[in-house]
Length: 591
Image (cartoon, rainbow, N blue to C red; front, side, top):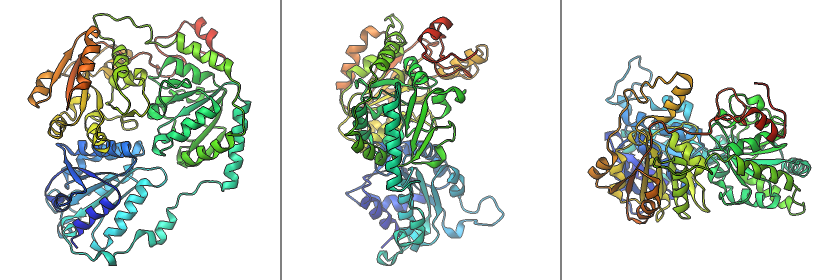
């Protein structure tokens, strides 16, 4: 059997239905093998970074393995940003790169390059992947594929890469004689174990339940690890059984429907003010699958939930007590933890926290910075997002880019039941949303993908408009266009005395409606909120891709925002000091 045929057989048996790729000489054997199959489809994109993001979107939507392929040299290097995105956001993806023939590869020779487009992609991506290997022995293909997929999915998921030379791709192998990774001692060494036995886990859960019953102001921080562990059903059951209010990280926004009465927004540097006030004043914080980066905690990490007893549950031991010291660190798969604790909660009364709900509901009523916005001739992005979210339907996939558009959506898009929100969290890569929607829709056909991007972000992978048009995907693109790199201008106004180098000075963008027309995509311009409802309804009902250029003022900003070196509850625009002191249940910090 030809080795490239074996690779495709293997992927099909793993449930992979789509390969996201940009062809090149060094990968043609594998793509040719895929082309002769009915049970797997090649999705040809126009930039390898886009292929990597599409594979990530695919994997995140169906909780299966995403697969992207590229040729050697520039093709492989163009996928690096996407590989890093999967690594930081814990997404299981297999990246396969073609490589020059082994007899053209330099190996240990002290030269820069021997073969055309030869590049040592394995050592380049090792710091941002769970496993990467150059396969030079055709008889190792089964072992390496099994190992790669197991590592990608096992424990805390992430990306893996196999670099396969052309002469290995075209080699003849005997599948029945190939060694299996699962028969090896190496496989046994990879088994992820919790830090405790089942008996000890039960004891830990008893301690957590005791902390919940004793708390007066408990709070759940739901992170992206809940989605990674496929534990949304379990966490919603836990919330129902305890009635504990919930805030989320950016990556955890879609683990709970936002009409759930326990949901109280997103925390962090660009979070909802009422959410951060809730976080600051809780006396028990149960952290589920969140790595607590400084975008969540603020720079003054010693002030984060400073009076709360903190319990942190995560499968990755390196994240526990890494950035924030906690009272109880629980190394455990979130899904298994929640299953066990939910069983025990059947015999426990819900905590009596009506007074706490009264406090945080007051926060939400009085300090929801966008609830009292007044419609004017200029489009307020948060109001626009609220309108858009109200008109979407269950099953819609919300794909966010990076920048102001991402934060406006995180603050104001009300997630409905069975909706997903995909964004680049740890990598924070502009250009993510458009290609991610391609993979998401291939994993979940029949739904709309709502792409929210900025005039800067869409230009990073704008060539994928052609892919979306060619595939006739139901992608509804809303470009929040303030004709600048707005997140950077806001930063420059705050810290650089308004010197707008490269965010306004030197920056430019095209007429997106004309550009969409060139790709054969219907496009509209929105200049006032008065026309928003009618246009959004029209766009969401149309077949195929559509683009809407949403015109904003250039100086439109994201508020509230946490200024550097302030505690999480003290966001810009600053509240009056007496008012902040009055509403806080704990002591204010010194300025």
